[in-house]
Structure formats: structure tokens, C-alpha cells
Image 1 (cartoon, rainbow, N blue to C red):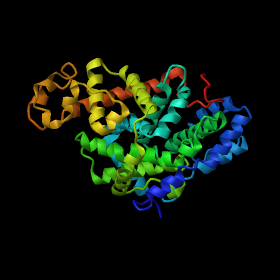
Image 2: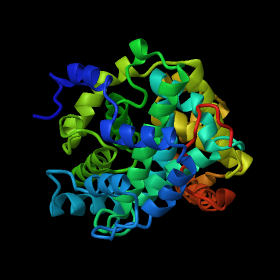
Image 3: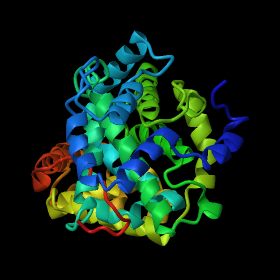
Image 4: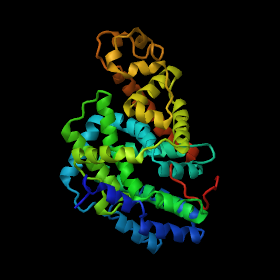
Length: 384
């Protein structure tokens, strides 16, 4: 039947108690058998796999898992692929940047999600959150790469994320630090589908708020892309994100305020992300960039995340575009064009600059420690 506004609350409650049994068992065995380094090598291998490739050289249990994990969503079609490709043909750069900022910060507003991310923060490596943040940006970039949903590359990359999620669940299970009665499973199916909502319909809302015209067909294509990703994250069919953009928006609008709360963990994770991104933008641009993220999220949710306010927030409202203050934002970032007419959107230029800046984040991911793959760990506080 799929998710509906009438069933979503009960389905999410059920999904909060469910992990990913097949991936969880696989990862549990690997950890118990002290095969962690082998798993990290496996992550490098998965990215090279293609549909129909010979898996006979892999251990049988891994080969069987990967073979099953490679199956397409049961209702996937050529029309879905074309719709997704159409969205990314027009909005790839903007969507990638917004998923890596507005989207990631949105996931920090889930109390259980923020705790899971912060407590496993060392999976980012001893140098901080760079590995995790840059890998996330690479996943968003990969979604719009040419033929990514045809040649198996996106499916393989999402499968790596699926195994990382299973690793997080196992680390928490073995640590004894997770409150199962309060939060259900770590990185549960509820969190996975909720995150898919954040990275899809929440991003479309942000794009529209920033003055980006997203056609109905393009919104449908973006939902198809996240339906695809949701499937490869190991989500059962009954909890997959629908392909209908209006339905997904209605579901998310109905449930968002039940799920998003201000927590110390969420504020901490947001600050880590903003501080990390700061290195990729000059000071004035970074201030305008943060003001843009605030506006895209709305003050209500930006305050929950602890995003800083500044005088630059005046630029966030297009109605204020005739104000003298705006012409000086970011040391002339917006130039005199912002003063030409009241009602102009001052964020078009910032969006372009921010999208280019995100290319540097992606380069960081490709060169960080000469290893752009996820890292699985033996223990929760393993600081390798």
C-alpha cells in the first residue's frame, strides 16, 4: 500500500524498531571475527563493482549479500530514471550543495540521529568531521552523475552507506550506550526514510524558498532518485519514500515537527559542519553562505540547529533587497545589482558561488588521507 498521511505515524513508529537484519548480521559476523580491516578494503572494492560482475573471488557470504543488494527497486522503470536525470540536468550543483548543508543540518535535528552521529564522530577520523561530511557530499554528487542510475555506480556507493549504517548499529549494540527504549534501533528504518525526506522534499522546499524554479516534473524526478537511494539503503518496500512529490511533501509537513527538536548534540554537529565548510569560503562569502542556509531552513529550524545570526540575515528576505546594507554583503559579493529593484532575490549569486565552493569539499573527499572510502571500526570510541 505504501506510506500515506493516514498511516505514516504508525508506520514510522514500527520502523523505529527495525534495523537492517541482513546487513546487521553480515557486519556483526565481520566484527566478531576481527575482519574489520578486510571490510574497509571491501568498501574500496564495492565502488568498482558493476552489474553482472564476477563476485566469485569474494567470500561467499559477501558475494551473496552484494548480489541480493544489487537488485533494483521492485517498481523501478526507465521513466523513473529519465525523470531523475531530468532533475539533475537542471539542478545538479544547487541540489548537491543544499543537500550537503540544509539537508545534513536537517538530519541533526533528529535527536536520535544527532546522538548516533555525534557518538560515532570518530568514524570521521582523528582530524574531525571532514571525512564524513565530504563523503556525504560525494554521495549527493554521485546521484546526478551521468548514467549513475544505469551503470550500478550509485547503487554500489549507496550499498557502502548501508553497511556503514549497519556498522553504527553494531557499535552501539556492543557499547551498551544506546537507549533502545527511548529511541528504538540506531539508524533505524524510521531514521533512514526520514532522512530521505529531508534530502528530497525539504531540499525542494529550500530551493523554492531561495527563488529556484523547480518544475513539477523535476520535483517528481528528484523523488524518484531518493526512492532509488532509499531502496539501496536496505529499506523494505512498505517504508520506501514514495515517488509522488506532493505526497512526500504532505507526509513530511505532517511529521516534521514531531521529529525535529533542538538538542545539544544537534547544535554540536551543526557547528562542526559550519566550521568545516568555513575553510572553503572567504570570510565574507562564508557569512553570506550561512545567512542563505538560515533562510533556506527558516528561522524556526535554523534556531533549533543553533545556526548563528548576523547582520547579513537582512539579505535573506528578498523584500529587503533595496536596502543599502545588502550592497555591502560579503565585501561586495552581491554587487550593485542587489539595489536595482525591490523584490530581487539576493541569493542567486550566493547559490552559484556556494555550489562552486562545494566542488572543493568534494575534492577534499577524494584526497583526504589518500582514501575516500568509509571506515568501519572495531569499537564505538575507536579513534583510528
